[in-house]
Image (cartoon, rainbow over all chains, first blue to last red; front, side, top):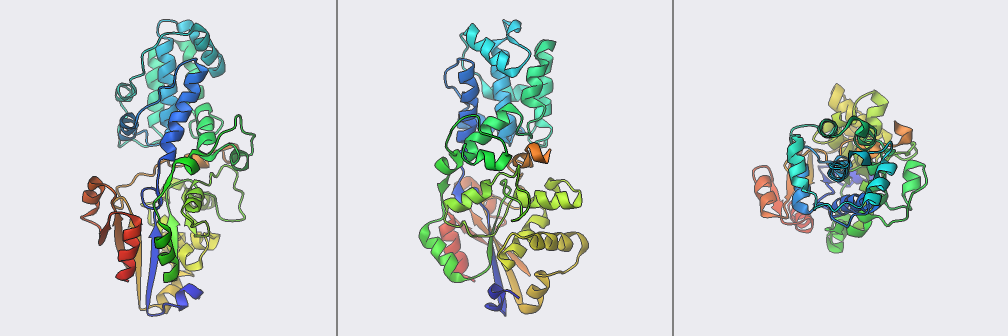
Length: 354
Length: 40
């Protein structure tokens, strides 16, 4: 039995804390989206003109909840706009096409990103897996056949960090200093982490002190990408949940993020989305991690045993026998069950995990 | 084992969506922690 548990034998209280809009105001992802769109616009010789908040809302409302998918749509839309009267600007590769547009220096109006996403016609109920496929089909139907390699490069493998828009976006979210440790490849340019620079801490030091003084088990659980359990191969696992915890002074908190459930899914041949919240597996893993004060393989396997087999392994067995009542307080900004994972699977993409 | 939903609704829209399911409804995580710890 853990020290946490023995301190509260008769009434065990456990806190689970969400990250986005609970511990931090997540401004970094949108900043990274804009920076990435502008990166490609600059390579086309175009002025800064990324999507505004209302337009990003439109993307998210139409099945593009992941920036890994909305960014290449913005880039492909701008390329299609530039090459509409000059189909010869589509070249064999994305790099060559960007350079050809820059050389042609077309006078383009601002892209209507909202109209573009409406025209693509994906729906909010579509999975994030399908939305980029829909976008690829949309652009392929409106561009010459020789544009297809460039469209494929942008949209066919958005989950892979080898995909150009995804790779640039991950530079901006993680920062160039963290990029090689995450993906095992050198950064292509230097940049700060926009998650660390733009996300705003919401947890005040006084409240953090209250939480620590209460000496009750707690864990952070989130659909954000995260590392796998300690000691496992972390290549391709972006530590975005851990970065948010560090931002609010909870770097030592046990975290159960997308990387942890993705690791668990790998062990069992399942798809990570089957285990991420609102699946009970992630919540149970967070409870177990709180009890053992570590996002350990033991905690993850125990959660799956409870959810799938109805078993009661440790630390759940000790919890049942050691406390008369157990109450789990879940700190959320969204009603359970309505949340869609912000970016399912995507941050686990990487050369080693593909 | 019971589950208590501590809703953190930083906007009126979020507060409205959380109201039907939240056992505690707070405007931010700091208030939420204080309320949850007071009641625990």
